[in-house]
Length: 439
Image (tube, rainbow, N blue to C red; front, side, top):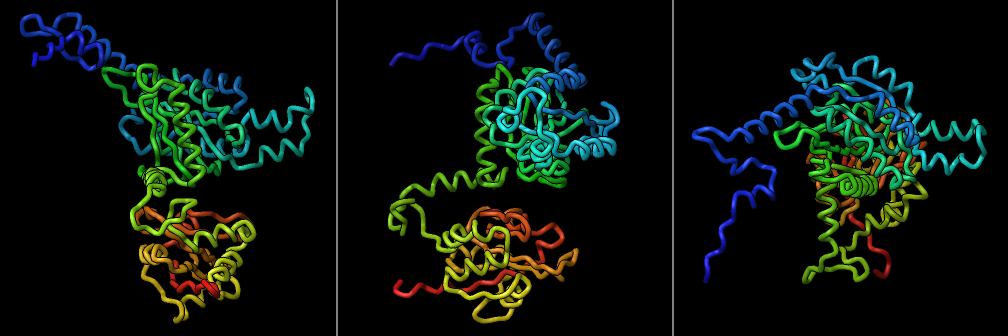
């Protein structure tokens, strides 16, 4: 066998931006390599200290039909921003007030034109405008300078433009342009706007091979205190890395998955893997021919009852229980008393045990009385726990629930059913499913 032909340094350099095979002059780098390094270092430093072109970006967003609002973080200047990352994760007081005044003012221009564009030039019915602008947004975009305003100035608007028509059914909030912002500032902005989903477009830390790399961080139901494990990231968006068309397709797919499964981060990644393997045949497994998945009567009952009872948590729980041969009566407070009252209900230790018993095929009800809430209320709240992994924060199982005066949630973890002060007080209890006659 002939030896493989040696690969030359020039050939290797053509396939990587890494500085390899640079050559030397005596004990030093050749002059061209040294000057190239100094230029890359200067570009990286300039990117860190560059200013975001907020006025131009706002004007370009306006041309796309999107509103924009200029904000800044609690970091008063660039030097403070670099020394105090924590200040870059929250808005200053003035920006909070500005954002509150703009809440509900954004909308997708594609959707807006479809709704009101047929009224003729200058004719806009007040009731239609109010209906559009009073909605909490489905999606909020945040443009933050991060550690490379160079990247933001070059790529943020082209990326938003590329995804806009893929979101024509979505209600889009005003785009926040933030000076001195870090990734987590999107949690506060999305929370103030009441957005279901926030996408933070931010300049990534520049290196010696790229000073204009843009990142996008997507978070479901953003709120201050969200952990990084609850986000998904697209990185290295630039012509020499992930080009805009490719990044836009990936971002649209990511946002669609987040909205479908109502989650992001590690939970979404694992859910997508779980769904992928749920259709792979398993030898000896009792799987349905139509779906290729294990039968789940509790989840089937939840799906069957949700639309009719999404605005009533106790009515939803009673309807699901009835389908499974279990009797529940009364409102949420009464149901909590029932599941705590002993046989045939078995109180479980926590959400982990609840998830395990749901996976084993039991009917699991979780509940908390209104008088036990951190802010006492006449109405309690109950949920129906279903099988699902991973548990949120390793503690909170998946569930379905109705919501009094609103719309509940489907196949979401219960940390979204109660606030942070109440979710660890919830009682979980299990009941055997009663087979239907003749089953």
